[in-house]
Length: 181
Image (tube, rainbow, N blue to C red; front, side, top):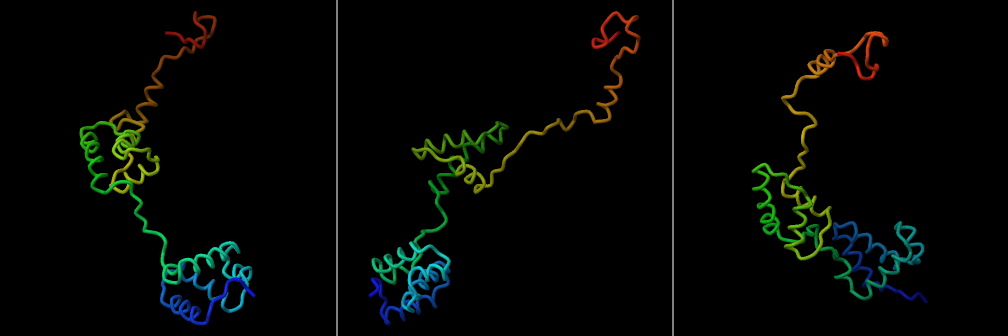
């Protein structure tokens, strides 16, 4: 006799729940249970569903412990895993926004330090970068050249005007590397 059995009533309830759900994760879990009722072993069910056999056993166990209602629900609370509320985050960023408007350079390390102080524990750098992106901040880098600097042609022309000694070594008192006036 198999250890884990599903009755006809349970199978009908599982099948109805599987037809009602739109979440593919829940549907997959329920189909594993349905395969068990249909006579497939855990190894066969794992192969059919494309999951590990130990996962099948965990699903069986979880179904027995939690029941169908809890088993057919999502276990995640949502995608918003913020450490502080939006208002608290905005309050911290407002202080730095004033400094940025005045022309001061603001670094992510400074914002991280303030964020950690309010939170009371260390926060990862990645979270700070996501926080800044979420609030519409962007990374600004200085230009590699001044916008009012001389053009490339003017720079090249000035290089041609430099004094170069083209005299033979005997007449020039300096070495060729030093150049002549």
